[in-house]
Image (cartoon, rainbow, N blue to C red; front, top):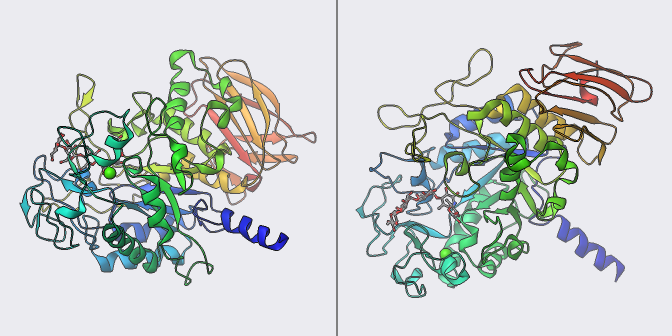
Length: 512
Ligand code: QV4
Ligand code: CA
């Protein structure tokens, strides 16, 4: 009996909540709109060597080609079939990416669009990334195949057929989200097609899925689908490993649907995290960094072991989805680095780093009219490759936040302090705070408009450390500021409010 209980407990912990990252790797990065060839190269040349655990990729399957506006990024959120040809590459390139990334211990997480197909106004023809014929008006997707029977048109009770009221869970799940043809996921036939798609990906070697628009699907349907998924490919994963599942549910409170309804299926995106931390770091609404002493569940966030956390995502960095104006992005680089640094230092949640491309914002009445612009493209419409400059930044308008020294070094920091408790909190009652992770790492922020000069208990062993924000350890030297920790674990930190990055971080692998 005891053994049985133990087995059940082990089974639960190792299930769909576990990101399946290689041991000692604790974050994933969303390489938004990257081509498969570029991701494969990035796994080998950068992500593997720098301790990244995995990559969330853009949707890999057949999608509509939108002409008005011209080839927006969001066309990939309108599936036409489950064939693996997309703006990022074909099936052979996809397989090559998964194999090469897995071989260097960087795993692939697929953005799975299973709530819907393309928009009801998507027309008919072969304007899809695989060149598949479809007819949106007739609900005909012969390459799956799906037909009228497979959609929720009859079940939705709003006059327009669209979601009109987020206070009504039936509408949110049975009606169309911005016109997207809503699949009837309670049908065994539809479930079977989706399971087939996801299992093909698992067998190729992916480690898990982001379920797009999970709020718009019934948790019971998602449970039925995930229960039918294969274990991960044993070429790279231990026998019996379940796919990691994280669900996109935007729950900022006040709606009919809450994140907790999805905890039985897998982890859930915690959208409060980036919205709140953005307000804190921007010092809006009287927020102060010192209030983050009980950051995490103490702020009303979901349980730590259910949360997928991030500062911004591909929607809210451009005003789509939810989260509001407080969201920090690469456009506010100095504040953004602090936000990402805080997230990666703090033990709460499983962390995802965003990696974007640049576009010209055009604010008109509080909306960016360029929020649709797709990835950097060549004149023939193909996505530009990610070039790497001599200083290791990216060219061709790829921002590559994950390559910013401060962010990359904090990804490493998180790996070094993995499993260590939140410790040695200090604050000045305002916007200067510090905390450690057991005796392995310590971070200090100065978001006040005056200097920080404080001698703090770091918990670290005595010695000279290299601050991995202002620089990093290279061989035996430090390219940034050095911090001396004395025999009692105390160190003096001086951070000017005018520093390029007004924070500092040290950890045991950056000891000189
Ligand atoms: C238009 C009209 C509709 C009309 C329809 C007819 O607006 O009124 O009924 O045509 O066909 C695009 C357009 C949208 C258009 C629609 C269908 O922006 O105007 O409707 O296509 O043609 C992304 C974008 C959407 C985009 C969608 C599909 O953000 O703008 O819609 O892709 O291309 C909620 C959800 C949450 C969601 C978030 C954005 O709860 O789940 O909104 N987030 C996820 C993804 C997101 C994606 C989708 C869901 C849909 O992260 O990127 O939407 O897959 O909060
Ligand atoms: Ca739905």
